[in-house]
Length: 401
Image (cartoon, rainbow, N blue to C red; front, top):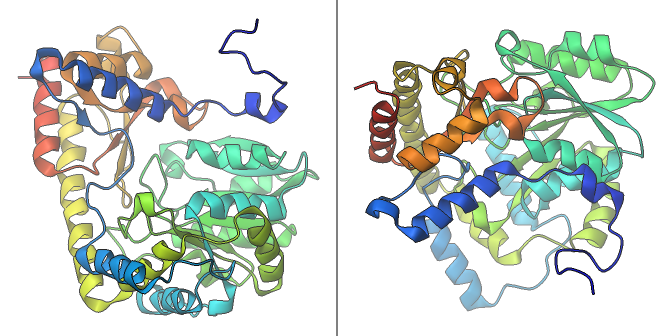
Protein backbone atom coordinates (compact mmCIF):
# COMPACT_ATOMS: atom_id res chain seq x y z
CA UNK A 1 0.00 0.00 0.00
CA UNK A 2 1.24 3.49 -0.85
CA UNK A 3 2.26 5.82 1.94
CA UNK A 4 -0.20 8.64 2.51
CA UNK A 5 2.62 11.04 1.59
CA UNK A 6 3.06 9.51 -1.88
CA UNK A 7 0.91 10.73 -4.80
CA UNK A 8 -1.29 8.06 -6.35
CA UNK A 9 -0.33 9.18 -9.85
CA UNK A 10 2.74 10.84 -11.30
CA UNK A 11 2.80 14.59 -10.78
CA UNK A 12 3.77 17.02 -13.53
CA UNK A 13 7.48 17.88 -13.66
CA UNK A 14 6.72 21.56 -13.05
CA UNK A 15 5.74 20.70 -9.46
CA UNK A 16 9.32 19.69 -8.67
CA UNK A 17 10.63 22.88 -10.30
CA UNK A 18 8.65 25.05 -7.88
CA UNK A 19 10.15 25.35 -4.43
CA UNK A 20 8.17 25.78 -1.20
CA UNK A 21 7.42 29.33 -0.12
CA UNK A 22 9.67 29.46 2.94
CA UNK A 23 7.98 32.49 4.48
CA UNK A 24 4.75 30.51 4.68
CA UNK A 25 6.56 27.53 6.21
CA UNK A 26 8.08 29.81 8.84
CA UNK A 27 4.65 31.28 9.53
CA UNK A 28 3.31 27.77 10.15
CA UNK A 29 6.16 27.09 12.57
CA UNK A 30 5.40 30.34 14.39
CA UNK A 31 1.72 29.41 14.59
CA UNK A 32 2.65 26.11 16.26
CA UNK A 33 4.72 27.96 18.85
CA UNK A 34 1.83 30.33 19.50
CA UNK A 35 -0.52 27.40 20.06
CA UNK A 36 1.97 25.86 22.47
CA UNK A 37 1.96 29.14 24.39
CA UNK A 38 5.53 28.65 25.57
CA UNK A 39 6.30 30.98 28.49
CA UNK A 40 2.98 32.65 27.83
CA UNK A 41 4.67 34.82 25.20
CA UNK A 42 3.09 35.82 21.94
CA UNK A 43 4.91 35.86 18.62
CA UNK A 44 5.60 39.15 16.85
CA UNK A 45 5.09 38.63 13.14
CA UNK A 46 7.33 40.58 10.79
CA UNK A 47 7.50 37.91 8.11
CA UNK A 48 4.43 37.90 5.87
CA UNK A 49 3.85 40.99 3.77
CA UNK A 50 0.28 41.70 4.77
CA UNK A 51 -0.93 45.07 6.07
CA UNK A 52 -2.29 45.03 9.59
CA UNK A 53 -4.89 47.49 8.31
CA UNK A 54 -8.00 45.96 6.76
CA UNK A 55 -10.58 47.36 4.37
CA UNK A 56 -11.98 50.67 5.65
CA UNK A 57 -15.63 51.13 6.50
CA UNK A 58 -16.73 52.58 3.11
CA UNK A 59 -15.43 49.46 1.36
CA UNK A 60 -17.10 47.14 3.87
CA UNK A 61 -20.36 49.01 3.47
CA UNK A 62 -20.10 48.78 -0.33
CA UNK A 63 -19.64 45.01 -0.03
CA UNK A 64 -22.64 44.73 2.30
CA UNK A 65 -24.72 46.82 -0.08
CA UNK A 66 -23.73 44.58 -2.99
CA UNK A 67 -24.81 41.53 -0.99
CA UNK A 68 -28.14 43.09 -0.09
CA UNK A 69 -28.77 44.07 -3.71
CA UNK A 70 -27.80 40.61 -4.92
CA UNK A 71 -25.21 41.82 -7.45
CA UNK A 72 -23.04 38.74 -7.00
CA UNK A 73 -23.34 37.11 -10.41
CA UNK A 74 -20.48 36.64 -12.86
CA UNK A 75 -19.11 39.84 -14.34
CA UNK A 76 -17.48 40.34 -17.71
CA UNK A 77 -14.14 38.53 -17.77
CA UNK A 78 -12.38 41.90 -18.07
CA UNK A 79 -14.17 43.20 -14.97
CA UNK A 80 -16.93 45.65 -14.14
CA UNK A 81 -16.87 48.56 -16.57
CA UNK A 82 -17.40 51.01 -13.70
CA UNK A 83 -14.40 49.61 -11.84
CA UNK A 84 -12.19 49.80 -14.93
CA UNK A 85 -13.23 53.43 -15.34
CA UNK A 86 -12.45 54.14 -11.68
CA UNK A 87 -8.99 52.57 -12.02
CA UNK A 88 -8.37 54.64 -15.15
CA UNK A 89 -9.31 57.83 -13.28
CA UNK A 90 -6.98 56.82 -10.44
CA UNK A 91 -4.04 56.65 -12.86
CA UNK A 92 -4.83 60.16 -14.07
CA UNK A 93 -5.21 61.54 -10.53
CA UNK A 94 -2.22 59.86 -8.90
CA UNK A 95 0.29 59.32 -11.71
CA UNK A 96 -0.71 61.77 -14.41
CA UNK A 97 -1.11 58.94 -16.92
CA UNK A 98 -4.09 58.58 -19.25
CA UNK A 99 -5.07 54.91 -19.47
CA UNK A 100 -8.00 53.82 -21.64
CA UNK A 101 -10.34 51.73 -19.42
CA UNK A 102 -10.53 49.25 -22.32
CA UNK A 103 -6.88 48.32 -21.59
CA UNK A 104 -7.60 47.39 -17.96
CA UNK A 105 -8.16 43.72 -17.08
CA UNK A 106 -9.53 43.08 -13.59
CA UNK A 107 -8.15 39.85 -12.12
CA UNK A 108 -8.40 37.58 -9.09
CA UNK A 109 -5.46 39.27 -7.40
CA UNK A 110 -2.06 40.23 -8.78
CA UNK A 111 -1.11 36.54 -8.81
CA UNK A 112 -3.83 35.81 -11.37
CA UNK A 113 -2.67 38.86 -13.32
CA UNK A 114 0.89 37.55 -13.50
CA UNK A 115 -0.32 34.07 -14.42
CA UNK A 116 -2.37 35.55 -17.25
CA UNK A 117 0.59 37.60 -18.45
CA UNK A 118 2.90 34.59 -18.48
CA UNK A 119 0.27 32.41 -20.17
CA UNK A 120 -0.13 35.04 -22.87
CA UNK A 121 3.53 35.84 -23.47
CA UNK A 122 5.81 32.98 -22.43
CA UNK A 123 6.36 29.87 -24.53
CA UNK A 124 8.26 26.74 -23.56
CA UNK A 125 11.95 27.50 -22.89
CA UNK A 126 11.53 31.26 -23.31
CA UNK A 127 13.86 33.10 -20.97
CA UNK A 128 12.61 35.94 -18.78
CA UNK A 129 15.08 38.24 -17.03
CA UNK A 130 14.39 39.30 -13.46
CA UNK A 131 16.49 40.58 -10.56
CA UNK A 132 17.85 38.34 -7.84
CA UNK A 133 16.53 38.92 -5.16
CA UNK A 134 12.86 39.13 -6.13
CA UNK A 135 9.44 37.91 -5.05
CA UNK A 136 9.73 34.09 -5.33
CA UNK A 137 6.38 33.55 -7.02
CA UNK A 138 7.50 35.66 -9.99
CA UNK A 139 9.95 33.02 -11.13
CA UNK A 140 7.38 30.31 -10.45
CA UNK A 141 4.80 32.00 -12.68
CA UNK A 142 7.33 31.77 -15.50
CA UNK A 143 8.07 28.14 -14.68
CA UNK A 144 4.35 27.31 -14.68
CA UNK A 145 4.25 28.65 -18.25
CA UNK A 146 7.22 26.33 -19.05
CA UNK A 147 9.55 29.27 -19.44
CA UNK A 148 12.93 29.78 -17.81
CA UNK A 149 13.46 32.57 -15.28
CA UNK A 150 16.93 34.05 -15.57
CA UNK A 151 17.86 35.42 -12.18
CA UNK A 152 20.29 38.33 -12.48
CA UNK A 153 22.40 39.00 -9.35
CA UNK A 154 21.47 42.50 -8.19
CA UNK A 155 23.08 44.07 -5.16
CA UNK A 156 23.01 47.36 -3.29
CA UNK A 157 24.82 49.17 -6.12
CA UNK A 158 21.83 48.41 -8.37
CA UNK A 159 19.30 49.04 -5.59
CA UNK A 160 18.66 45.26 -5.81
CA UNK A 161 17.04 45.87 -9.21
CA UNK A 162 17.61 44.87 -12.83
CA UNK A 163 19.37 47.50 -14.97
CA UNK A 164 19.34 48.41 -18.64
CA UNK A 165 22.98 47.30 -18.79
CA UNK A 166 21.87 43.84 -17.59
CA UNK A 167 19.31 43.67 -20.40
CA UNK A 168 21.88 44.64 -23.01
CA UNK A 169 24.47 42.21 -21.65
CA UNK A 170 22.28 39.15 -21.12
CA UNK A 171 19.73 39.31 -23.94
CA UNK A 172 20.07 36.41 -26.39
CA UNK A 173 17.99 34.57 -28.97
CA UNK A 174 16.05 32.79 -26.20
CA UNK A 175 15.18 35.90 -24.18
CA UNK A 176 11.54 36.90 -24.40
CA UNK A 177 11.23 39.76 -21.91
CA UNK A 178 11.72 41.11 -18.39
CA UNK A 179 9.64 40.83 -15.22
CA UNK A 180 10.27 43.64 -12.73
CA UNK A 181 8.74 45.01 -9.55
CA UNK A 182 8.95 48.62 -8.42
CA UNK A 183 8.85 49.03 -5.44
CA UNK A 184 10.09 45.52 -4.88
CA UNK A 185 9.41 42.67 -2.53
CA UNK A 186 11.70 41.83 -0.67
CA UNK A 187 13.76 45.02 -0.76
CA UNK A 188 11.27 47.89 -0.73
CA UNK A 189 13.38 49.64 -3.38
CA UNK A 190 12.12 51.26 -6.57
CA UNK A 191 13.77 51.47 -9.97
CA UNK A 192 14.76 55.06 -10.67
CA UNK A 193 12.40 56.39 -13.40
CA UNK A 194 15.23 57.24 -15.81
CA UNK A 195 16.66 53.73 -15.42
CA UNK A 196 13.24 52.14 -15.89
CA UNK A 197 12.79 54.11 -19.10
CA UNK A 198 16.17 52.86 -20.32
CA UNK A 199 15.12 49.27 -19.55
CA UNK A 200 11.85 49.69 -21.46
CA UNK A 201 13.69 51.09 -24.47
CA UNK A 202 16.31 48.32 -24.39
CA UNK A 203 13.62 45.61 -24.27
CA UNK A 204 11.52 47.32 -26.94
CA UNK A 205 14.53 47.52 -29.27
CA UNK A 206 14.86 43.75 -28.99
CA UNK A 207 11.19 43.00 -29.61
CA UNK A 208 10.52 41.77 -26.09
CA UNK A 209 7.93 42.40 -23.40
CA UNK A 210 8.24 44.45 -20.21
CA UNK A 211 6.04 43.47 -17.27
CA UNK A 212 6.25 45.72 -14.22
CA UNK A 213 4.62 44.71 -10.95
CA UNK A 214 3.45 47.98 -9.36
CA UNK A 215 1.40 46.56 -6.48
CA UNK A 216 3.38 48.59 -3.90
CA UNK A 217 3.53 51.80 -5.89
CA UNK A 218 0.79 53.42 -3.81
CA UNK A 219 3.08 52.91 -0.81
CA UNK A 220 5.88 55.22 -1.95
CA UNK A 221 7.45 57.54 0.61
CA UNK A 222 10.28 59.70 -0.68
CA UNK A 223 9.21 60.90 -4.13
CA UNK A 224 6.12 61.02 -6.29
CA UNK A 225 5.92 57.59 -7.97
CA UNK A 226 6.19 57.27 -11.75
CA UNK A 227 4.26 54.45 -13.39
CA UNK A 228 6.00 52.40 -16.08
CA UNK A 229 2.94 53.19 -18.22
CA UNK A 230 4.52 56.61 -18.72
CA UNK A 231 7.07 54.98 -21.01
CA UNK A 232 4.75 53.57 -23.66
CA UNK A 233 1.54 51.68 -24.37
CA UNK A 234 3.53 48.48 -24.95
CA UNK A 235 4.43 48.17 -21.25
CA UNK A 236 2.32 45.76 -19.18
CA UNK A 237 1.74 46.67 -15.54
CA UNK A 238 0.28 44.65 -12.69
CA UNK A 239 -1.47 46.14 -9.68
CA UNK A 240 -3.58 44.99 -6.77
CA UNK A 241 -6.10 45.98 -4.13
CA UNK A 242 -4.09 44.01 -1.53
CA UNK A 243 -1.38 46.40 -0.38
CA UNK A 244 -2.22 50.12 -0.66
CA UNK A 245 -5.95 49.32 -0.53
CA UNK A 246 -5.58 46.79 2.36
CA UNK A 247 -7.79 44.08 0.76
CA UNK A 248 -5.48 41.05 0.78
CA UNK A 249 -8.05 38.28 1.23
CA UNK A 250 -10.50 39.85 -1.22
CA UNK A 251 -8.27 38.59 -4.07
CA UNK A 252 -8.63 41.45 -6.50
CA UNK A 253 -6.08 43.00 -8.83
CA UNK A 254 -5.67 44.26 -12.35
CA UNK A 255 -3.47 44.48 -15.41
CA UNK A 256 -2.95 47.26 -17.91
CA UNK A 257 -2.12 45.69 -21.26
CA UNK A 258 -1.31 47.02 -24.75
CA UNK A 259 -4.45 47.72 -26.83
CA UNK A 260 -3.68 44.92 -29.27
CA UNK A 261 -3.44 42.31 -26.49
CA UNK A 262 -6.76 42.90 -24.76
CA UNK A 263 -8.57 40.23 -26.78
CA UNK A 264 -5.94 37.60 -25.99
CA UNK A 265 -6.03 38.38 -22.26
CA UNK A 266 -9.83 38.35 -22.28
CA UNK A 267 -9.91 34.91 -23.91
CA UNK A 268 -7.47 33.52 -21.37
CA UNK A 269 -9.34 35.10 -18.45
CA UNK A 270 -12.65 33.66 -19.68
CA UNK A 271 -11.21 30.17 -19.78
CA UNK A 272 -8.92 30.18 -16.75
CA UNK A 273 -10.83 32.30 -14.22
CA UNK A 274 -14.23 33.29 -15.73
CA UNK A 275 -13.99 36.54 -13.74
CA UNK A 276 -12.76 38.05 -10.52
CA UNK A 277 -15.04 38.06 -7.47
CA UNK A 278 -18.11 40.15 -8.26
CA UNK A 279 -18.52 41.07 -4.59
CA UNK A 280 -14.92 42.26 -4.30
CA UNK A 281 -15.28 44.31 -7.49
CA UNK A 282 -18.40 46.12 -6.26
CA UNK A 283 -16.72 46.77 -2.92
CA UNK A 284 -13.59 48.10 -4.63
CA UNK A 285 -15.56 50.87 -6.28
CA UNK A 286 -15.60 52.56 -2.88
CA UNK A 287 -11.80 52.56 -2.72
CA UNK A 288 -11.61 55.53 -5.04
CA UNK A 289 -14.00 57.83 -3.19
CA UNK A 290 -12.19 60.93 -1.81
CA UNK A 291 -12.96 60.07 1.82
CA UNK A 292 -11.59 56.56 1.35
CA UNK A 293 -8.46 57.79 -0.39
CA UNK A 294 -7.90 60.09 2.60
CA UNK A 295 -7.92 57.01 4.88
CA UNK A 296 -5.42 55.22 2.66
CA UNK A 297 -3.13 58.23 2.54
CA UNK A 298 -3.13 58.47 6.34
CA UNK A 299 -2.23 54.78 6.49
CA UNK A 300 0.56 55.30 3.96
CA UNK A 301 2.07 57.93 6.21
CA UNK A 302 1.83 55.52 9.13
CA UNK A 303 3.81 52.95 7.13
CA UNK A 304 6.43 55.64 6.46
CA UNK A 305 6.61 56.35 10.20
CA UNK A 306 7.23 52.67 10.85
CA UNK A 307 9.96 52.55 8.19
CA UNK A 308 11.65 55.59 9.68
CA UNK A 309 11.72 53.81 13.05
CA UNK A 310 12.68 50.28 12.07
CA UNK A 311 15.51 50.89 9.57
CA UNK A 312 17.77 52.74 12.05
CA UNK A 313 16.65 50.38 14.82
CA UNK A 314 17.95 47.42 12.80
CA UNK A 315 21.30 49.14 12.38
CA UNK A 316 21.46 49.73 16.13
CA UNK A 317 21.08 45.96 16.54
CA UNK A 318 24.09 45.27 14.32
CA UNK A 319 22.36 44.78 10.97
CA UNK A 320 23.22 46.87 7.93
CA UNK A 321 20.57 48.45 5.69
CA UNK A 322 22.57 49.03 2.51
CA UNK A 323 19.70 50.65 0.60
CA UNK A 324 16.98 52.59 2.41
CA UNK A 325 13.61 51.24 1.19
CA UNK A 326 11.57 53.95 -0.48
CA UNK A 327 8.33 51.99 -0.81
CA UNK A 328 6.32 48.89 0.16
CA UNK A 329 6.76 47.77 3.79
CA UNK A 330 9.99 45.78 3.74
CA UNK A 331 13.58 46.22 4.81
CA UNK A 332 16.21 43.97 3.24
CA UNK A 333 18.99 43.95 5.80
CA UNK A 334 22.51 42.54 5.66
CA UNK A 335 22.73 40.23 8.66
CA UNK A 336 26.29 38.94 8.31
CA UNK A 337 27.67 40.66 11.38
CA UNK A 338 24.84 39.48 13.60
CA UNK A 339 24.73 35.98 12.07
CA UNK A 340 28.47 35.46 12.37
CA UNK A 341 28.31 36.36 16.04
CA UNK A 342 25.70 33.61 16.36
CA UNK A 343 27.84 31.21 14.26
CA UNK A 344 25.22 30.90 11.57
CA UNK A 345 23.66 32.39 8.46
CA UNK A 346 20.34 34.11 7.78
CA UNK A 347 18.38 30.85 8.04
CA UNK A 348 19.92 29.92 11.39
CA UNK A 349 19.52 33.48 12.60
CA UNK A 350 15.81 33.64 11.80
CA UNK A 351 15.30 30.33 13.57
CA UNK A 352 17.05 31.70 16.66
CA UNK A 353 15.03 34.91 16.55
CA UNK A 354 11.80 32.92 16.34
CA UNK A 355 12.54 30.37 19.04
CA UNK A 356 14.58 32.50 21.44
CA UNK A 357 12.92 35.91 21.03
CA UNK A 358 9.50 35.15 19.56
CA UNK A 359 10.14 37.38 16.54
CA UNK A 360 9.44 36.26 12.96
CA UNK A 361 11.64 37.53 10.13
CA UNK A 362 12.42 35.82 6.83
CA UNK A 363 15.82 34.62 5.55
CA UNK A 364 16.96 35.58 2.07
CA UNK A 365 16.66 32.01 0.79
CA UNK A 366 13.10 32.67 -0.40
CA UNK A 367 14.11 35.41 -2.78
CA UNK A 368 16.83 33.94 -4.98
CA UNK A 369 20.32 32.48 -4.99
CA UNK A 370 22.38 35.68 -4.86
CA UNK A 371 23.79 35.95 -1.32
CA UNK A 372 20.63 34.62 0.38
CA UNK A 373 22.60 33.65 3.49
CA UNK A 374 23.64 37.27 4.00
CA UNK A 375 20.21 38.91 4.13
CA UNK A 376 16.98 38.87 6.07
CA UNK A 377 13.70 40.51 5.11
CA UNK A 378 11.65 42.36 7.68
CA UNK A 379 8.05 43.38 7.06
CA UNK A 380 6.98 46.46 9.00
CA UNK A 381 3.32 45.90 8.15
CA UNK A 382 2.55 45.67 11.85
CA UNK A 383 1.78 48.25 14.51
CA UNK A 384 4.58 50.48 15.77
CA UNK A 385 4.29 49.27 19.41
CA UNK A 386 4.87 45.72 18.15
CA UNK A 387 7.90 46.86 16.17
CA UNK A 388 9.28 48.56 19.27
CA UNK A 389 8.75 45.44 21.36
CA UNK A 390 10.44 43.30 18.69
CA UNK A 391 13.49 45.55 18.78
CA UNK A 392 13.60 45.24 22.57
CA UNK A 393 13.44 41.46 22.37
CA UNK A 394 16.17 41.29 19.73
CA UNK A 395 18.37 43.71 21.65
CA UNK A 396 18.15 41.35 24.63
CA UNK A 397 18.85 38.33 22.42
CA UNK A 398 21.93 39.97 20.88
CA UNK A 399 23.17 41.40 24.15
CA UNK A 400 22.66 44.99 23.00
CA UNK A 401 21.14 46.27 26.23
